[in-house]
Length: 264
Length: 299
Image (cartoon, rainbow over all chains, first blue to last red; front, side):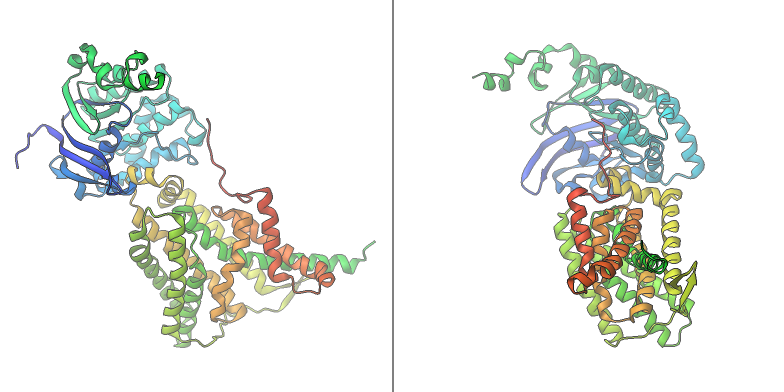
């Protein structure tokens, strides 16, 4: 078994299916190096979320499974580890749609992240202060039920909850979903700051390729369950064809195949 | 103008009903614990109650002192909780709620059968040393046993409340109750949490089983007091411990008052089904129960 020492996460020719029948991934490859921000780009339904769930071994909980290939986090086969063990090993994910515990307060939500890692009380307290430093607004809302906070506050809560588990690889699924551009920027700025200050590695799935490419070092594009393109963020951002080809061509609705179908 | 005796009698019925209702609450709380954290309506709660009472009384009959029998039965209930998680819940994880409900229905009969096999089918008398003599309080005759049972119920609720809000495992319980998938992703160990919840429900079953067993005798019909707990749950909401208490109080009081004041007009015997009438009427107005979880959401 050969693996590059700097590859924190390696995904090799992974395929996955739901319910034993519905194939969602047909061969995805990617390597994430220690300390980098890797963007996972693709249009709706390309397989980003399935891949991220596979990385955290969350597919079985949704009646899905890997049907081929392997995913290794620091050399450990993730399919052999429970999601709880992966969190304790430092692989922490913020789910698509945030999934805050709605009836728990913001602070209680954050503390569940400490539970997930079995932090001591002192560690949990220190981590809580760090999260409030990163997202000062959350400190104001600490006693509010998470379900009553705004979308941006919920996203910050979900990210803070993940950070409370002291990740070494932080996986985020569509952190920009449904949020105002200003809030999205604040969130990405915060992530970039932790990446720069602590070398935290990030794997971020995004439909919003513009913002993702602005902050990422490298990106992988997936389409129809396959990884089709890998490159540095600067390189990919410079190519106009990428957006229209793989990412749904949001700029020119008339040129996208779906739009044509609708118009016909 | 009602005369003084009638007023006194009314209050006696009311208080008797409220206290009897808390006995239902004790059973209902066991349901709430499991429903809240795993979304499973555990039909086997009554069988667990019977099993606990039967185990306890058999140990006492073999000469075990009260405390030892209590601790040993609790240990057995913990073992039962973990065994159920392992053999029933884990293989069925992610199945639809109706599948899990059916599984607990089957489980109820397995536990009853096991109890029968282990301890035989005799009715046992259970004496907790609490007298059932009526005491006079503020002019009302109230059973001292009911008062003890009520105190136990409140003690249990207070303990569970503190457990849920003040401890780390309580926080984990509430997280799982809120969003199972997120709890899994956060790294909470769901199998362990479920096993713990079933063990806690086993403890509640033990406490309720002792009180009900002391009242009715430890016999197999104990397991059907689940049917008394259902209207309480419909009224109070399936996921609220406070709801189980308030639901029990309302059901207990309305049952007794109906029996005494409406019973004579319809030939009596309405106590056994009136609870369902109350619960059904209530469902029409508030489908999620008095304290059932309203979805906390801001769009």
